[in-house]
Length: 103
Image (tube, rainbow, N blue to C red; front, side, top):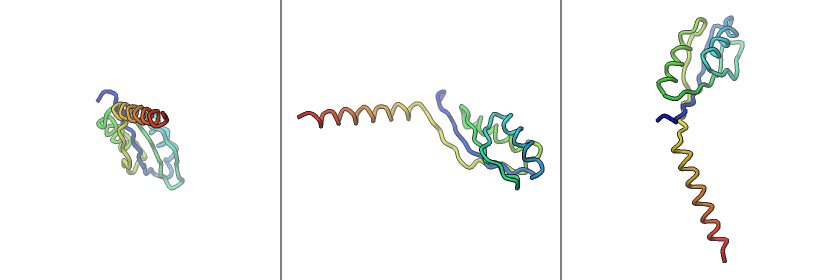
């Protein structure tokens, strides 16, 4: 779907002596680094228009110099249909509330 937004989190394991360099490279791939550890772990989030684009980003991160491994640990699709369904349900609930409030 053209309006889908794919959200993902990754755990990246880097060489401890390369954590800051890996952090910069991961951010250059368009990802956001939320946490790093001295042992070389990074908690990362990214988003894209398609699952394939997320996979491409994961592959790029896995191939970065200093990265020992990278794994996707979460994937969520946020689409307009969900927003439309939520709005319709909210409207229906508000209409029901109005009907119940009438004497």
